[in-house]
Length: 222
Image 1 (cartoon, rainbow, N blue to C red):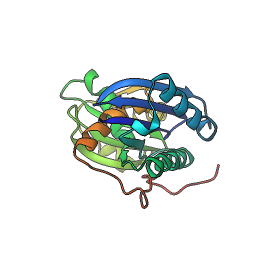
Image 2: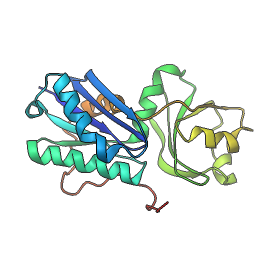
Image 3: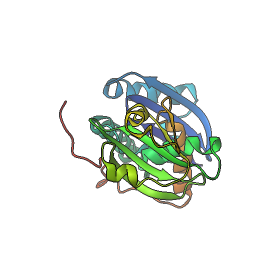
């Protein structure tokens, strides 16, 4: 049985999903800033109850591995590890940006590259570049939008920037006619679960004791 609980807390969205055999069976999302510490566990318990699933039937826990909010990732990782220790099940970490890109792959043609963008404060975003079939062209990194080196180094082909960093991208990248922007795309545990199932089949577990999320940049107090 491959019942996987997926947790997404990399941004302001608190999202939880259940997948069985790679098929989505339930999902809940709370769009509330700084809600993770208070609501993540109640959301999980409610999702399991409403799905008639006992936590002991879970085969693995999948978490959004970043980059993103330091606090959000830390909370999601702690809760995920707690389930893994308590149930003696593996931990699966999925790149937040890859999950976002996965959600947009059906909506672009083969020539368009996907650039998920998570706001990283000031003029920076967390991003990567991938093609329609999921091949990574540029791994997760911090992009400084006010850098001419970054702007001039973008591929000369259609690019789609999307996510909560897309509005910031518009300010600096509008002159590049290859680029389109979509703001209303958020990370979701749904995509984390889909990608986690492939890792589950290959037994690509994260080390529960030593795993830390991909923060990319040092945490800064507001």
